[in-house]
Image (cartoon, rainbow, N blue to C red; front, top):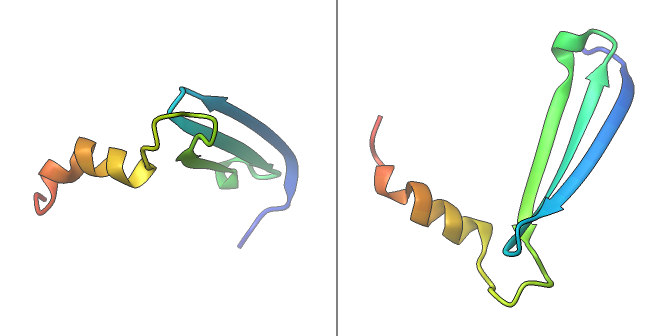
Length: 66
């Protein structure tokens, strides 16, 4: 079963092309705590590269490997 959330901590950063937002949800039972990260294109960037394109360029060559 779950454990009540007792604290949240959020942060964010940008590397020019992407913006990453993170939140850590601390549960009363720490082993049930969760970290969530969301990556999106940085709207203030001139380079319009999507996270999906980055993923494909970085890891697509491994597709089908186990």
